[in-house]
Length: 148
Image (cartoon, rainbow, N blue to C red; front, top):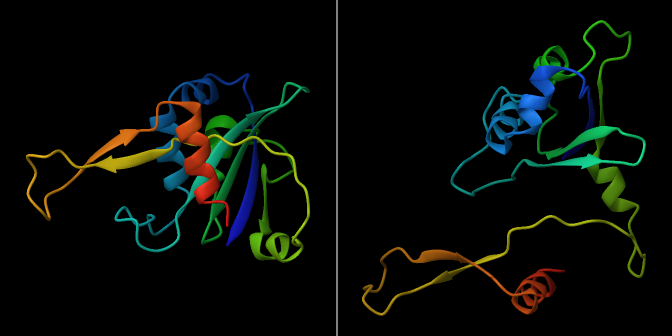
């Protein structure tokens, strides 16, 4: 697994277009891999998030099973003429092995907690409906059940 950090040049119109559309940014992240990630939910997933910090920096973080190639993002939303590559990729396993029980970390979590509901008219084996947890109490319970 790899952890990648990419600094977005928000002064470029293509960067603003990507940041304004999660769908486009999702496609750009998936285009970073020669073999697209599995859509069936089997195997490791590619996770990404955008952080904006106090220094007016916008950073894209990607956790992925393979090492991404973000050349297309540098050309579209980075600094293509810079001497620096535009992104940094680190071994995620090294980071995870440095974590110890009892460590305290501060972080922001963006999640979309959902559950599946079954209507009474559905037969056994039929597809259930995915629904969002709407209250903070349900969202917190969803998160705590998955903390391990």
